[in-house]
Image 1: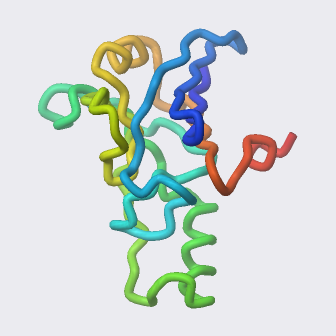
Image 2: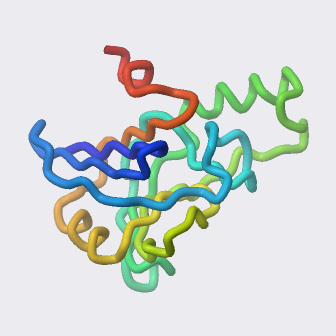
Image 3: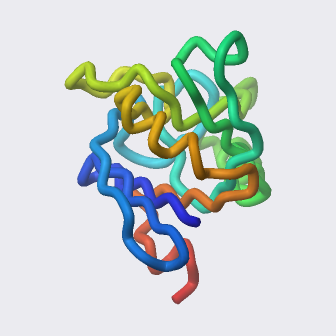
Length: 150
């Protein structure tokens, strides 16, 4: 299983056993262009992640959700470099709680950096995605071939 989030195309591509299964529309962080730099920037991060928790019921306000392992090691390295070089203020924090979640379908980018799907699409994915499923988020700064080292 694999989820690829294409920020430019506003699409979530889902593969199972190497075979394309779904193409789903998404909504992103309200300031989605570029890679996430720090908490509060409302950017959806770009990189290779994995699902670390599945949430439903009282565990999420977004119908259902997959918690991703942002920030990962690459994100932490970039964050420290950016603080050191002055790209972001020294008092910045990196943020977290990036999810793929329901309650999408608003027709605009509105999240704080998450990926939103309509509830019916989230239901489809929730049934067979597992903790550990890789999620690749590509967009304006990191093309797919750079992330997966083809």
